[in-house]
Image (cartoon, rainbow, N blue to C red; front, side):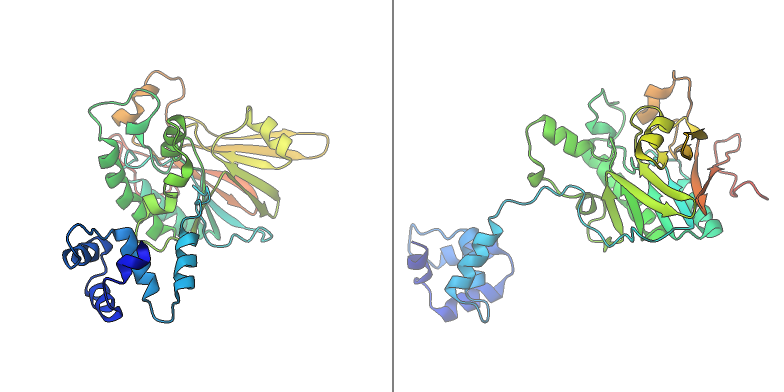
Length: 325
């Protein structure tokens, strides 16, 4: 049937119609308008004809190409990025905690820019929850906040600005960051139907310098450090289990570095706070918790962790420096 429909038009007519528009829907309508009554040309057929009449293509190559496109998409929600040099020893690492865009502190990125300028990192790691996705939460969402679509549109410019600041960054998969994947899974939708983080948050931007993974193990002069969004139990037990130091996010009200020792070595685990707007309705659930949000980030210099608080004035504005002036 496909060959019969193709023969309704000469090669020259195909070339004229296909070159007149790049839209398969529009081209299908042109074909249909010039076909005998009752004949409807589909956009899928136009897609095949584009391959068939491309320069240097044979019917066999066109058919093989179409079959290849029908293969099941691999489940790669984290996407693919550039290369991370696992064997390199990193001496200055800036660690960015939970941003929760678009419900982040209004000076969060300016603060991170100051941290970057001071410490000149050779590696930047984001602990996850770069986007909040409150409207898609499994818990009750506040009706006075943005819808899921509006929330995403408000988030994308923030992430784009963050990408300009840190064009190379390793990001940890997280409970808020992966919210749309979790919701899809809960409703029986396979990940093959979904876009990657990169396609959703940074559309149209060359963002190969960003990579997402469940966790990152990085070498420093004082041993390996594991970065992930949440600890599996107590942070020092998790660190000793993985036989390396550990940095996690998730806990907005924890801004500490804890040390422990086994008979073999010294371990440390770090919580680096958050960068949220604590007064946003998105975080109303935290009003009655003991641990209030602490804004800041962390740096690891030659393997030694340091807390960098984001100091605020009485009006909740960042004071504009890192506290050393």
